[in-house]
Image (cartoon, rainbow over all chains, first blue to last red; front, side, top):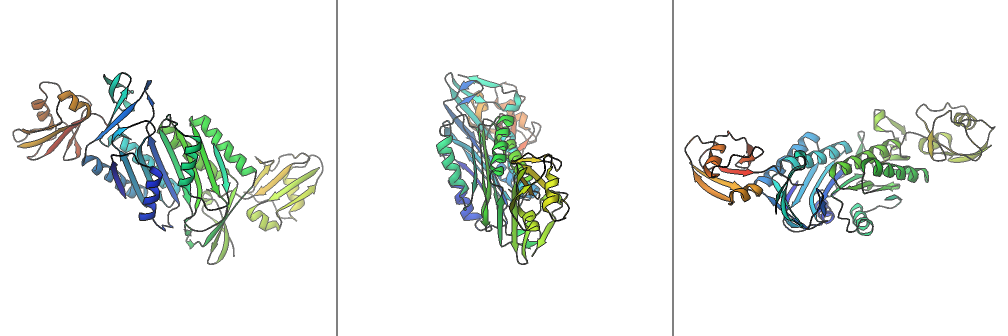
Length: 152
Length: 152
Length: 77
Length: 77
């Protein structure tokens, strides 16, 4: 398992290759890998986005993500899981989050990666602040009718 | 879109990086990438597997996969999709199939990659023949109670 | 009519051939071709049939020059 | 009891500080700390509260030395 909060831009594929080489090497029990990558868009809620600042709660965030992956290992019987999440100042096209799970059969990895992403989105302590042409704004979660608090 | 039937071992991450560089470059509308990789296991239905031969129906297979991805682009409003499938003689840990979809929001890419994989599994003309310690056997689909036709 | 018939996977093993060209009367179905080429073996219940790279059922009526394929349930991915 | 209080995102902006140490009587709840530090602003309806890195509700009773955090709904991923 790997949980990482990363302050610099990262290459998701290089990271996956490294992880597989060092942790999952020759694991011929793996039949399925399900990977999700979230990347920064240059447009959100009808405004161009210039940059984005991602903040987290050091200590709690790592603990929460570790729990998420451990829960998935038990619930979905996955072989292993990885979550890498960027914080700091991002620009459009930058990777934000990488989730990967490995399992014998595809159902397990598909479901695990999906559930990790949904739980991360709704409960892991991260916050996004976007810079638009009108200043900055804290992003509000989508399930709250995509409201936005403007603080230009 | 890219559909490829490949006769040699392939590196899924290199392939994704190349595709993104050449086809999706600077696409700052992409917020989500959902990737599935199927790899060969060394164990199936209670027997060790030495090698596997993957056969397809040239022409029909490519046509069917193209239709699958086109259907997904329409149904899930994904930005782009890719399917690469190995044929020929495989050994354990070899990549078998890579599916990737790209979309603005995560729901679309998650659902598209999942549906492409399920349709590919149930309808795309590929057949697996496994070599075990007892000879070879044609693999039967899992929804048929995992029956196996032994032909040693 | 002339039909190009192809066999894959364990259907090919069963029949001992991978393709052939058959002559059959106008109005013949996919199943009709099977009965002609299979030396009396019944058409397998779970067989899949394609004509010109599209799935069809056993009652599908063929046209001259069609490519007809018989194969077992697929197991890719 | 001594409580270490932390604020994140727009809660930090609202209060103009990112952390502080407060002294409060035994039996105090998370909401009690909010009322002490927030200069009269009501506790936001959608606020999230954590004690020692675990989510709790506003009525959670604190212990001496706890780390208490207030933050808005999360928007990671």
